[in-house]
Image (cartoon, rainbow, N blue to C red; front, side):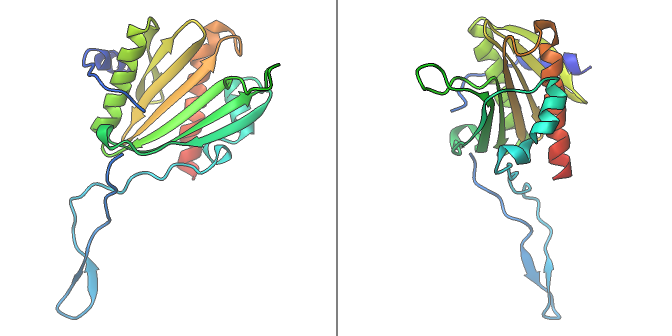
Amino acid sequence: MAGALALALLAGCTSGSDDGGTPTTGPALSTTGSGTTSAAPSSSAPPPLVLPDSCAAMLPLTELDAALGTGLPGSVSYVRGQPIPDIGRTDRITCGFGVVTGQDGAAQPALLEISLASYSDPAAAADRVVVTTADRQTAGDRVAAASVGELAAVALTGVSATTLVLAEGTLTYSLTLLRAVVPDEQTVDRLVAVAQAVRAQAATG
């Protein structure tokens, strides 16, 4: 069933690019006849998700190594993106694991990159998966259905890396693993395991 849902996303591709919205407030307070205040019912959406403020908060290295099945050399990078109202994005963080310095002294692409992005509503988050899938398929990546627990996901495999994308409510996950970090036949399974570990970490937070 998860695979069918992921493939169904591919049929509804729309245009757009990923690189938002206005935060909503909690229930308003109303004054009762007794002079006390109580929370008035509100039909507004819940406030945007608060994304982790560090890579360690997203996923400790010990948990990452266990899910990936190997340790990564180098350092860890953390970047916080900006809201993009046009696509409904309210926040984004990107953690690069296994960042090493090349012979020219410049940092090389992370061996594993994990991005979490929050959106104004579930429809905007789901649309990002559709758009990303369409863009990568157009670029020549191989597309395959996957699942992370009960969630439908899409694996996008190119020449140098594989990316796993999925949406959960107003949140999207994008995990990219370079080739040769793990055997090719294990790549998708390892990305799924890392995604599950990130979700589990968020649940305990």
